[in-house]
Image (cartoon, rainbow, N blue to C red; front, side, top):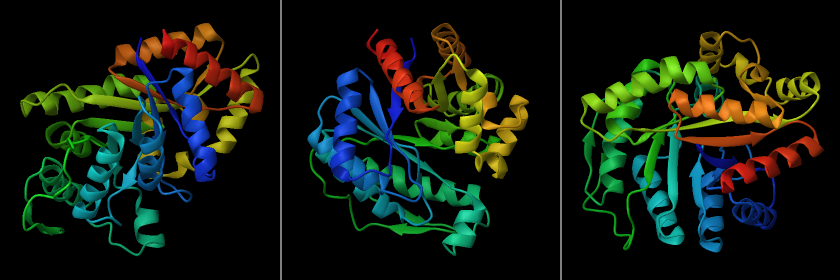
Length: 303
């Protein structure tokens, strides 16, 4: 069975987040993942949680690269590696043009070039090497290795959907983490392209972490309506719209795992066959359905 992790709810206090992460660990999940939107800072929160909770991997899905210089990102990630005894999966991404330009005031010109140069700087720093990048869009120079003892390079996943980004993720990082991307699209688009890039670069088979809405329910129509309302913004963002178009669906519910236990198990099996190495659950539906979904996936995770 595919490895199963769970998203953290990010709009809680740190104390409540600690309790939630402990619940995820105790339930038997392999990992807990923090998103970076407009609430708690994902890396800060993961650093705190991982220093208090043992034997649970933590991931970020994902940290936007524009506001954090590669050296800042590397220092934060390696500090968390120290606190967590090397249990961080660092998911990073470009975010979206409307966020980067309209909300933050950065240029979103040549995003793939930005990510390439970012990784050229970040990956050596994480490996304990000096960086010397004077690129077209990024300058990142260190006088020597970052001095954070006892740390290993975290697994780095790049949020990648378009072919150019999938090539970068396969050749320069350890894999990808996706959102709002359905099973058929993982099979026909994501997995083949990133694996081809990794093979061409003589790199290990890339990790493919896939996060999707999931709901154990006997009222599929109502659950789908709840999912579409909760995630209504995503079909309007160009990168996710492109993935939904490949899948042939209009709304978020079209790529969710929604229905009976048998249907969810079948969906996870198809996801694994498509090439995913980890499923990051976004339990959805009403309160009772979310709790039932969490408990059922925990059973699968323990098995």
